[in-house]
Length: 80
Image 1 (tube, rainbow, N blue to C red):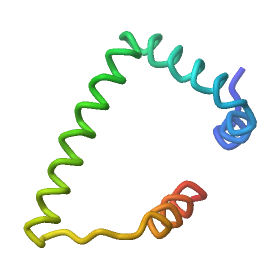
Image 2: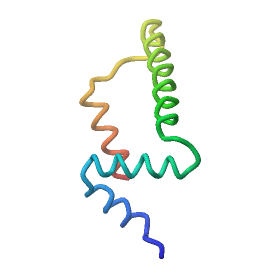
Image 3: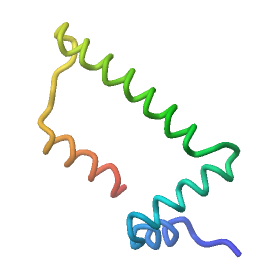
Image 4: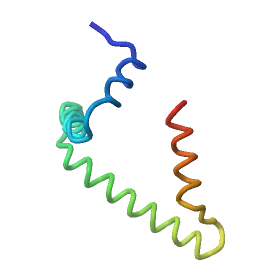
């Protein structure tokens, strides 16, 4: 039985955060690896990206935006 994607998204949003986190880790584990390994890889990648962005800011090739603006943009993208 298949659940339409939008219905699944809606149901997932209603889950408590800890239950959703457990589900995500379980899905990642089932996808072919230990979710803790994926988490470490993601953290490393974000560390490199944060460093790259900071260096770009210091060199004047990237500008900072206020957190509130960034969150507003993110929420708009998530609603699509």
